Image 1 (tube, rainbow, N blue to C red):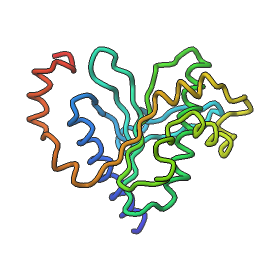
Image 2 (image 1 turned 60 degrees about the vertical axis):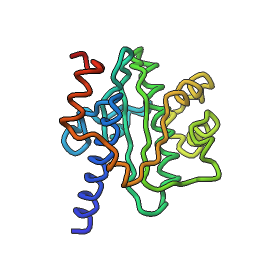
Image 3 (image 1 turned 30 degrees about the vertical axis):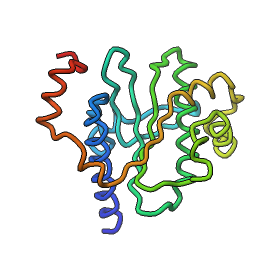
Length: 189
């Protein structure tokens, strides 16, 4: 029962994150890990599959795909370590795609309802933090050396967003969002 309650709380957090991000009108997230596992899974260099909470893409001319990890915490907990693993995964997934000649320019977003690592906050997306994450999670490299150009590439594809519960009070509802998309034509209609 405890696990089920935690799962339900996580799903509520994912839905809030989806609502907030889609309300920006720059992102669409049609897939979540609970309902669309195949669309939210990504392959690392070591052939391990990692799931993200949400997947979709940015809207507009460029339309890069997006993988979102959402942390709906009411305390810091193990979030700093979880974030370190997320950085290693983002690097490994990107390296795998580049190695396979299939880099789709995927971006990675971390949303959190509780700040963490505040002393390092301005550097949490840096190549140095990604390299440190890979040193802590060497399995993500699958025996390969860290590539400084790839560190730079991944760093430029990372997002880090604090999301307070009250942010959802500022979002457009679905009917408003549909009207805005008709006007902006970001979705192509």
